[in-house]
Length: 345
Image (cartoon, rainbow, N blue to C red; front, top):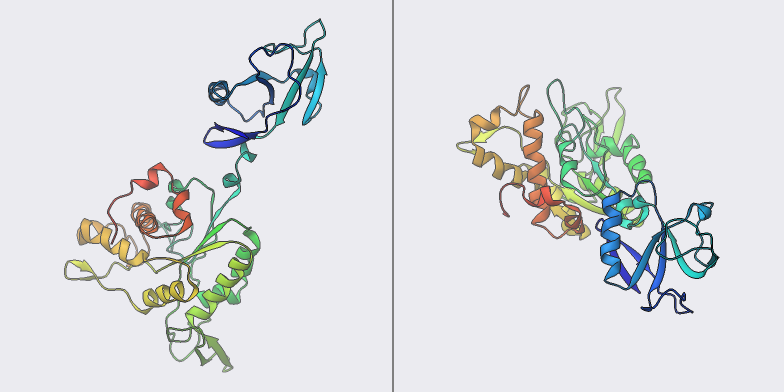
């Protein structure tokens, strides 16, 4: 089995062990490529260069055969080295490989799914703001689909069927990042449909009162997220738990410490034995280095929602935290992502 690279992808060629063409005086195999329209000429040049080192002869597929690909056949009237069908008839054994540039690699079919609230979502939390899930796409070599919705908590995202929709959209081999916490806090005397039962664990419940006086049993932050994690894992999707991002709240010259939802997220990663990114800590590291004055320019409306410049910093912090961890998603970080600022904590 021989392999040569096609624009960082791999196309496998199985060497034909049968009789050679009488034109093959150097024991080569004539390989005819049916080129997809998506395959650019520079890619053909790379194929030709690499294949020559593996003793393959490459020829364009004659128009005569473009009715459909075949795997192995005798073709009469094809002269090796020619891109057209000659007048004389010469039997030649040819391996014909039909492929599309987008289908060469399984990696191209993988997707990164993002699940969270307005701090991640397209459009952020209001005029002039943006979620970090938008700029982070530029740092990955696979497509990124942002399922984040403003105002959601782990509980509301679950109860409204949004987790189910994201699970249905994902496929085996995909990745998913789950980050909640900004809207999950206690709501007071009347339930807001978002608060979770307080406590660091899966089997924690409490009873709250709805606006109409009805008593509702609610579950913990971990309960809603771990149920989704189990469904993603069952589908062959790799989950990454990310801690909530910091607000623009300072304690002296540093960002104020994270609350209970940072701890909850880390505990989920530990219990489920899945990758965890301490997004809070990596954003705090970036903000501390920039200082309070510069960081405050990222928050045009409130202490929670960033403008596009702030979203970029928050997205870079996520990538840095990912690279410093153990998730297989690290291998999908592209060259730009490899050089995001700051180091491992």
